[in-house]
Image (cartoon, rainbow, N blue to C red):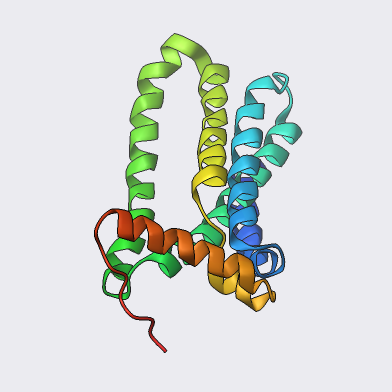
Amino acid sequence: SIMLMSAGIGAMLGAFAAGFLADRFGRKPLAISGVLLCGLTSGAIAFIPEDGWVAFAILRFFVGFGLAAGAAAAVPAIVEFAPTRHRTLVTSLVVVPVAFGVLSASVTASFLLPLVGWRGLAAVGFLPIILAILTMIIMPESPRWLESRGRETEASAVLDRIEASFAREGRVLPAPVA
């Protein structure tokens, strides 16, 4: 049915559009926007009327779009910051837990549904907004993207902050790879 397919269709379109949007606006803004869109529309499902199947399908479309667009922007940014020898591991640590999240969400839902109902479960969808706020605070913009846009000063500032954090921990960054 369209209600079930809408999230998948949104995810396909979100993933497809993410490359263009991330190249245009930056990795960080797209990652934040995607997670915000996913969280807002997921939680908003709790407020649709009982017979609001069209609204449900539209919201699910945007849940999928936001999730895929945010992930498609965040994963390359994470890979960019990961040391070369650890990129495969870091990428796996970011992507593999999604399967665990789906399983744990199903188990959690089976316990919470009798307590809070389907609207309460849908309201839990607002939680990714916290992740978006943390991403806004913690994640730097991609220095490569900044340089590609002629924003060398900002790219240098991001790299300086990364080097300073390594220095505080007594570590040294490896030499750049040409």
